[in-house]
Length: 207
Image 1: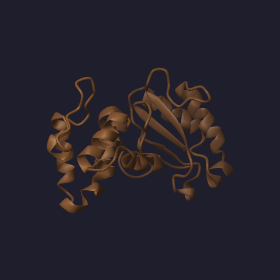
Image 2: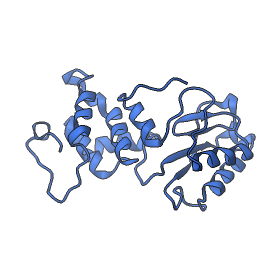
Image 3: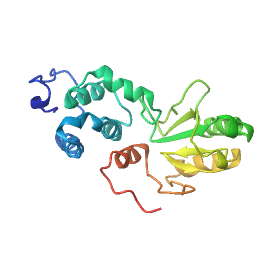
């Protein structure tokens, strides 16, 4: 459970679900130890990734517990979590597929790629999560690799110049249990695994 020494003695209600306990709390303490005592609120982003690596999202309980660990309000934690699209605050699939539809990607067919992702993943328009819980398809504002438009990320790993046909191949590979190799960098087995690596708790695999 959350360390009472860091929460003014407050203990969670018996009916509250606790995210940071046991080995997860040990991981949180390891993250906090990276920062000087006067600046531990700087740990907010890796702690958000840690919570996401456990639940596949950052829920209300995690937002509150991170605030308690850092001695700040839940609202301050939520302000960070909602600013960055890397953090998911709602139920999320095992694999997160981000499709950029900003100008460079749009001009090179990103809308068709997004449509192909929805169709292949079995996600209806207006939804992000597939019924089987395997996929989240998210329309991203910008992935910052305009030279390689249309750009797609799978579990934060980049895939360049993705066509509609290639998008269907990527989804089929994931559905078959194979994580496709990205254009550069490592491939992560799941969104949770990627989040744990981004929390700095796992060695990033060689590309």
